[in-house]
Length: 97
Image (cartoon, rainbow, N blue to C red; front, side, top):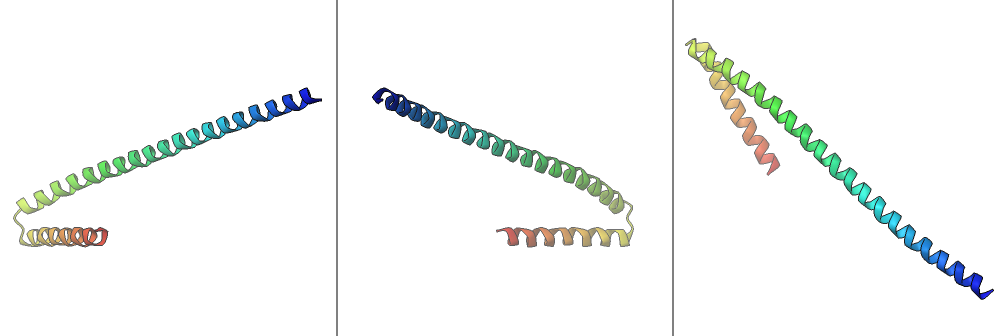
């Protein structure tokens, strides 16, 4: 009878060790998943900024063409847009910081 109890104790010890290893493996898997998700967010943010940069370059080019035409109304529109962008950036930065 004593031998059966000893084997049962050994089985319980092995089961506890296996359970802790499975928990550690699950923790590593969750960490890998979280890391992959954060990289996906970074990639999406990078793509968003890239498309925003392309849009800003196109807008700046069109604004430059408009300013070179020498039309007084166009120059005033350009000045108003620049002032609006500066004010918007100032407001966003003061809101963030």
